[in-house]
Image (tube, rainbow, N blue to C red; front, side, top):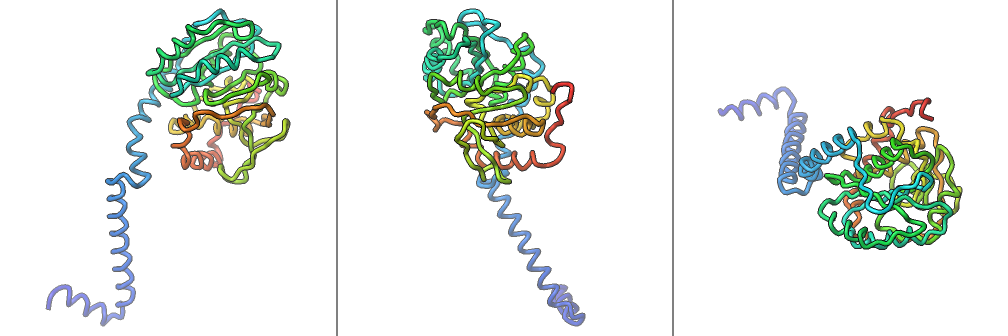
Length: 320
């Protein structure tokens, strides 16, 4: 009698045949599951594989972000001289070099009483020459009389706009500043609409919604003053005091740097700031190049991560 036969006979005599069958079935199932998982990773069809593939790029991005945090940030004054009374408008540039001329035109046509100080954060060094050419061809206007350019050594996502804001504050800027994206068109009252709504300790914007327990379970807002849970960074006005807290920059996990709108909104709300909608006509263009398309699942992951107590830093009372 073989060892296997003797083992089966013993199991039967002891009345353990049923639990033994269940254990064997579970073991086979576990082995099969592990095999499928390993094969999925090798084939690149499991999300773990995507995570592994992203690691080298994420490490480079993290190093670049940490280096930029140590600052200072270099602002190249490519057009005019910034005015101390101008409102700062910060634009993140990514993969849409043909849009810069339109952005310059949109801001030049604003009807606000304040002049505009444009700060461009370039996350795509490969397009630097095209951006600089568009700026060289731009004729300063009474409304838009200065353009500053920041060349990021690596694409660090939307957190770049907050590093630019931090540098502005370090240079003496106070009050509200405006953020927009290069895939947005706005009307001539865009800046004045946002400035009219701006208040201390608030973030207000055109792309606003409420959330009901999940990131994608949301309701878009349509009227100025409606309170929001989320404000998109593109097309918003923000109290520059938000960048006074070092933890705003240090507590965001590097893997979520591209989701700065979620971070800003949850951080501001956690700090007791007001988030609200502002009506101002706008539209999206070239949205097919939006980096957000690749972040669909990770946005929900980040939203859930931020719901864990302690993951959002408590803003020091001294920084209001």
